Length: 155
Ligand SMILES: NC(=O)c1ccc[n+]([C@@H]2O[C@H](COP(=O)([O-])OP(=O)(O)OC[C@H]3O[C@@H](n4cnc5c(N)ncnc54)[C@H](O)[C@@H]3O)[C@@H](O)[C@H]2O)c1
Image (cartoon, rainbow, N blue to C red):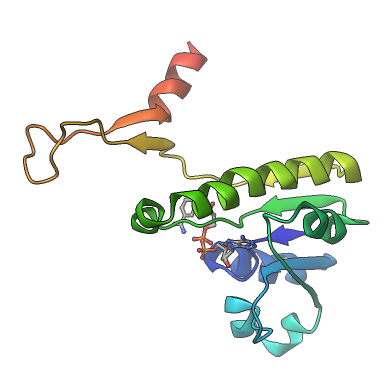
């Protein structure tokens, strides 16, 4: 199963997996148009071999249902736009944090062989109070978890 299958990376991954002969269930975010996002750009021969499953990562029951009889899970579903997260922080946390928790719980329940979760290698960042985007001397971002932490862990 591939979450975020209608997105940029997910749609390419689905195409590659189909090309390798895998049975692919594509978890796409539901909308009333029945639009599977960028999967529509797959060659028809590839698309017809994909099982589309519409749902929402925030809905544990939907994620559990999508994971039934799957052996491998690629988790790419997320709200990725940082400016959007400033305006809708709750939706972003529900999707990226609770949605990921749902994928983890459903994976454990389904006893999948492997779960691959692709996250941004730059990690999580915040801009400290008092920093100013217009003043480079004050503007600095601090990683909450990222390369520096990983380097520390590897010591
Ligand atoms: N594109 C990049 O350059 C890049 C680089 C590093 C990491 N990543 C990470 O890879 C992952 C995928 O990135 P992308 O560029 O393909 O993003 P994308 O926005 O193209 O795809 C994300 C997909 O998740 C789906 N989604 C969002 N909310 C959902 C929900 N509630 N339920 C179900 N589906 C939902 C969206 O509909 C979308 O199809 C993200 O975690 C991103 O942070 C991307």
